[in-house]
Length: 307
Image (cartoon, rainbow, N blue to C red; front, side):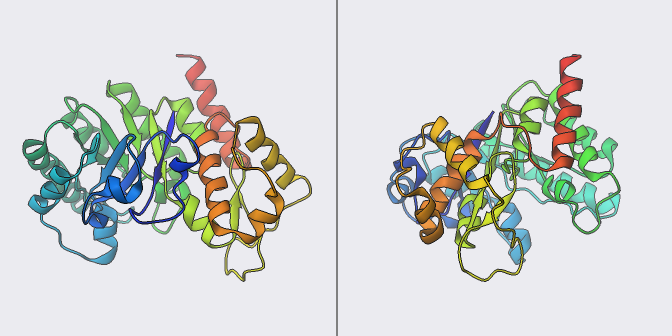
């Protein structure tokens, strides 16, 4: 399974200049001129429509304008403009949003072509999820969105939300024959579970955000605060041996810049970001560290072995 790196177009650092990355995902709202030139990247490029950001900021964006952006960018995949339902939405409201996402995909596919990938959203009503899953059977690829609140257990999610999200993703894998991408689930604690389900890819943009807050990601999940910067959440400092474990993980997988490792993760945002990017890319076969995700991984792997 591949973990795609989400990145602002003009951001630093650029991990693809230091080591191989599976693909890079940018946001359509971030596209001004030629994003490849700004990125310094000639590899596989994906473009997200920015549906989540549009919803979060209360913006209104015309589908035709998204189509214009897609046509300007030389990319391999374009994620359709989606309207994610929140976990607390009543079924009739969730259905309206799922229907709107479907209609947006039809319009963008007609305008841009088969490289436009529809986004189907996790929702607490499995029957509603499956009804819309059936509409996407002829799509060349499928993205699953809105899983993050269920996996992180945010406000409004039903009891057993992690298991529910995984069951829906598993159901999509059983019914859909093409590649499946799960949006925004690139945490090292989760990617081994998705890999066991048979998901083809996911993405992560937190490699930069965590680094900016002075944190490094650990193989298998978890983050450790390694700087003197004051933070309001995620204050856990490294336990004995954890940074040595991280160093050994990087070394075994060919991370190219390990000189002065322990000093540089403490003092350099860019170096922490490179370390974090490498960890998310290479953690798909590493057992999850948090007990709850380790248990889920064992259950999914056991079920997969019986198929």
